[in-house]
Image 1 (tube, rainbow, N blue to C red):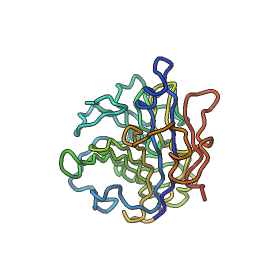
Image 2 (tube, helix red, strand yellow):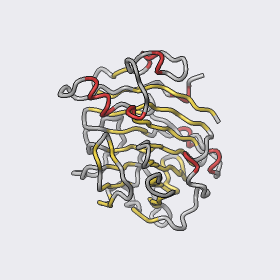
Image 3 (tube, helix red, strand yellow):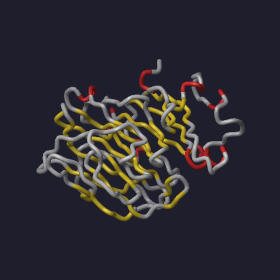
Image 4 (cartoon, rainbow, N blue to C red):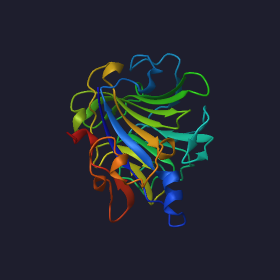
Length: 273
């Protein structure tokens, strides 16, 4: 198992001081190769679906929002408790009521056509098979240490026939995990978006460029995942951009702001040697 860390700091709205903004919107992001399922609460095989609740089926030829559904665990996003969510078959979950259908083609975050508080879990256009593809949900563990899984099962994404990805929301840590479980032939060539849209002007991206899937075996043991850790969970005693806050020796300057949007974009951690 390989784990690569990098530190991500997002500069927030002008109405907050830097310290306040950091508490609200900062994350430490890491990429975990062949690490299995995060936390080892979900010990099921990747394609297991017995006991899962169905959230959505694809609309043939297009994506759509399904919901609202009740949030089944004690969950806060950016220090705000959320009670309802919507899901899209193309890899999106939002906690704000959508006013329009998900955009096509996909866009780098922040995307003006997405609602605030939206998570992109390998977001991409889909080639759906309505009799096969499904979005599922299940809770693992006991309160207050539960994991809430949302799984996109068997979705085709051009030019890939089958993919399997999951979003995991961990109750006691408020972490987000975005799990790459399986992709059939050519899945490494996909151009998916992984991250969190805070608003139409702010976002946290887990990778610098759109990414393909890297898990090609139907086994939970080879699953890869991105982990988004709220900075409030960390014991930071000095400046958040200090080198001492990087678990591996990388340059803090590698996390930078795009000039035309307020999204902190790190280099792709999978390419770090």
